[in-house]
Image (cartoon, rainbow, N blue to C red; front, side, top):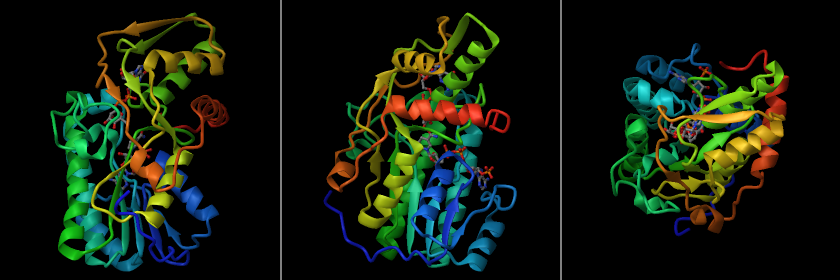
Length: 322
Ligand SMILES: NC(=O)C1=CN([C@@H]2O[C@H](COP(=O)(O)OP(=O)(O)OC[C@H]3O[C@@H](n4cnc5c(N)ncnc54)[C@H](OP(=O)(O)O)[C@@H]3O)[C@@H](O)[C@H]2O)C=CC1
Ligand SMILES: C[C@H]1O[C@H](OP(=O)(O)OP(=O)(O)OC[C@H]2O[C@@H](n3cnc4c(=O)[nH]c(N)nc43)[C@H](O)[C@@H]2O)[C@@H](O)[C@@H](O)C1=O
């Protein structure tokens, strides 16, 4: 990685704002930073601080004066939610990130980590997808609105670097999963959807489940605890304008993933496919060599990660987000 640097170690006693600290990614980062001795973590629920509210956001930054910010607050959803509510995914995300990044700049935040998503890359990008493929082709239609918001976020980080010389950075994770995920049948991503569908079918004795699409698209999945580790690693070791891909470097078809989930959950019935539901992009596999060269690779295997997520789901089934 050309822009690797050795910054001053992060100050564990500095105020660190994790935006979205109750979500899948934010909660994992919060846990990790806590374990790593960050003693002044700040988090606000969306009810306490709506980042779409510019005045409230500026007021919060002026009062709190964070030194570091991880921006893991966003409107997030699976393929159907993205396809059904493009206005919300564009407008809410643009407003949240512009407000948070403007307020961070106005309040001299030293380090910002902005989180985007692998859907920013062209729908038919060569695989595995390198960082430099950004803006080289058309986006996948089911999530173009969300992707444009995320691309604007990357550009804002780059613009702040260029205009103000601040060492702010962006990371682009692949599809994530793990404890604290959204298990809503309509709104979630595929892994939590499959875990819930198969576990309910097993529990209720159903002999058929129906998944979405054809099952042929290929996706790469990263456990959120690995994602949190990668975020801290980048904050400590990376300073460059290019977004950095975060993934495992391995992908599978949705059918293969569905079979692993069925096996782990103990579901033995039929699996059908509803091809009226969208497939999305045919393949999304990140080239993670930049991150690997900087010294970080994923540690949690897919089956191991799915197994612990199923355990988490069963323990929290009465309080999960639906
Ligand atoms: N999940 C995935 O597979 C992937 C996620 N990412 C990226 O990671 C980041 C986090 O995603 P993830 O953790 O999955 O999402 P979640 O939906 O799990 O969490 C989103 C968080 O954002 C907060 N939030 C939403 N709206 C607002 C608002 N108006 N004001 C303040 N906070 C708000 C929520 O707060 P509250 O709970 O209080 O409402 C919640 O904590 C996003 O940038 C996403 O693009 C990237 C690739 C894949
Ligand atoms: C992270 C990423 O997430 C989204 O893009 P996606 O990668 O297509 O993610 P997904 O997890 O929703 O679907 C993956 C595949 O799985 C199939 N599939 C089968 N059965 C279910 C199912 O029950 N639910 C869902 N959601 N998908 C299913 C589905 O048809 C598709 O082929 C965007 O929000 C995008 O903006 C983004 O950033």
